[in-house]
Image 1 (cartoon, rainbow, N blue to C red):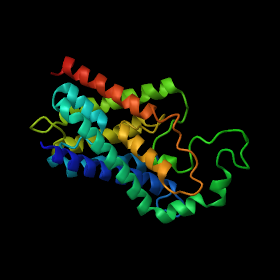
Image 2 (cartoon, one colour):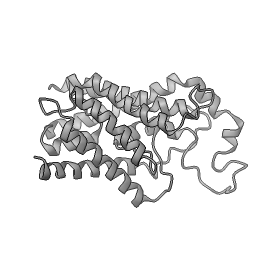
Image 3 (cartoon, rainbow, N blue to C red):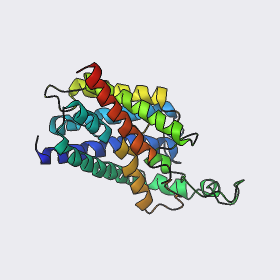
Length: 263
């Protein structure tokens, strides 16, 4: 496939992935949203449908990687040329940032209502009303819409969680999600992979929010830092490396295991 195919397919597909995935997080989180407090099931199925939609849109153009971990796993497996990897990654990051901006545009009024609500502002770290007045703000009140964060902050455990969860995803893609040309998700593979993502969210997503995709976390986190959101708090850059490095390690392990066990 051509460089333009990769750029167009990965940018649009990843943007749709983040628009729908970040959109369900916004719907569940923000005040004045009809879906507020819909819960973890809504989030996991929303992300599964986001993967399905993005993959269907991009599969015929770029192979629908939509995830640097998928690209790395396919490169190790041999289905994707290493020379194409930088373009895949750059397109995915751009698409993720576009998708995050679109979430903000769709929920613009809800973001404003949420972030100007006196209760939300009062309960931010470092604000009056908190027990620990010296705590430095790490994660703002809407950061979870844009990126992931751990329930228990332990770098080793958080990394292990992301590595294992991503390895499950990449093994599922390598073993049953390749199209006939061997370069990405086919139609049936997209459906299977979306269900795998739902399963990962339900079973392994509790500790960290299951990034399992470096640009799914990094792109929207950059957008969170740049957007003019009132009282948005910090972007938690001290944690940002975990959902980038963990999935890449998991993908590399999955690609190696595939070559040993299935090739």
